[in-house]
Image (cartoon, rainbow, N blue to C red; front, side):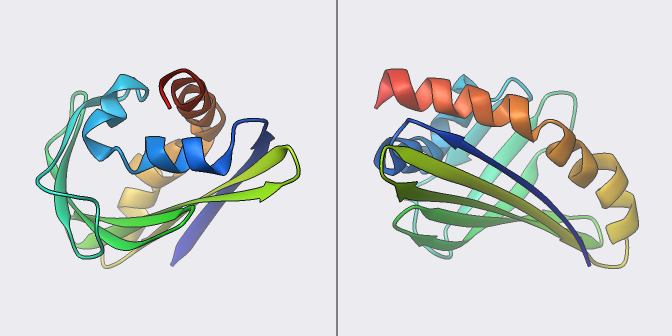
Length: 138
């Protein structure tokens, strides 16, 4: 299994960031790489949703874990899976943002190169967009 990590801090509260990341149907409002995301019902453990990257096929996703200030989801890829963890930890006026990507499976090496490594390379830009969205919308 391959893992990649990104971590940064912001002055935006854990509450605002968590509300933004669990507002799954609006991810495309801050993530330029997405055409859309579609979740029927609420963001709960075991819930399924669809994620459509720009220029790519629809991806079946499941929510593995959701608790205050932590969301873990899994993308069900062809012969592999990719788990993404978003965690927000408040300390005084600062929030630490932790973003982790894990890829495994028979074609895990392929999905690592095609998706996983790019997620980590783009994590700073994507996280800045999420922070901006959370700051102005929640």
